[in-house]
Image 1: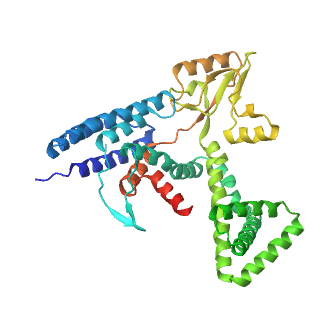
Image 2: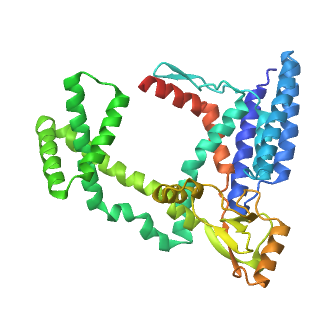
Image 3: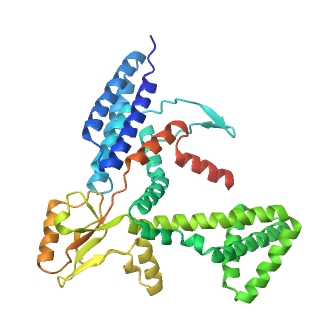
Length: 386
């Protein structure tokens, strides 16, 4: 009787990630009772598969890849980039699926799918999971805003309210695109990279024009575009307008709204081990406590404005508490309470809500199994465009 062990391990991996996602969303943990048995099950099933196939190297590669993924995850855990549950879940997936089981095979645009990476399949799962965290983060932030922080709805919908500004931006970009098309057609220099650069530069130039001059330029170019191809111009402008609103909304979700939605002020006596600080706290040479709560983007902007590159780097002084994913330790909590007794900090400490990573691992696994390695796909698209 034929037993399709790769199919079994793939199904086990998907079901396990579904349960891990549920647990991570509900309680913020990926339980050891799930991950530890999965590692054993993966090694046993692949051992049986190696025996049935008469290929000892299958279980050897499985054990080696599992060990490498655990070592990589452990290193990232020590650095504070990953939580312990994430490391163990990735290790379990490596034990279950050291190779792509190739559950399906199909072609799109003469490209065979799923697209295979040049590295072991578990690394494809990790990379795809990291790339998949963006759409999940957007959904998660929207959920938090709708449920607990409705005061942020106004900020989130600001791009829709500022429709006049976005209409002007749409007309400016449309004008830049049409001028670029005219130039490239006349010069027969139709290279997409040059065209994109030209569109960007022309958009900046038109935006900087005085309002009256800008209105004349935009009106003339838009009327000419409508005259030559009314339908395409109207449809393109509508798509561009909607795209601008979507992009601005996504940017807000990932920056200011995300930052406010995923932070809470917690009294010091309610702090618990593993909670993630929302900012780094430093003690300067004069014993003054300094809170570094500026985002990297804010630091870069301030650095350019003040022409001081040192602003981007970490502040001077001893770091007392950091924002690593490992979270607060008991020693950190005791230190914060001591600083409060010395009246150096307030009674509340800003905590960052950890974004559950297990749902992104589930999405990354499904993409890896049925679509392939996203890095390879992106590379293929870029090669095709350029």
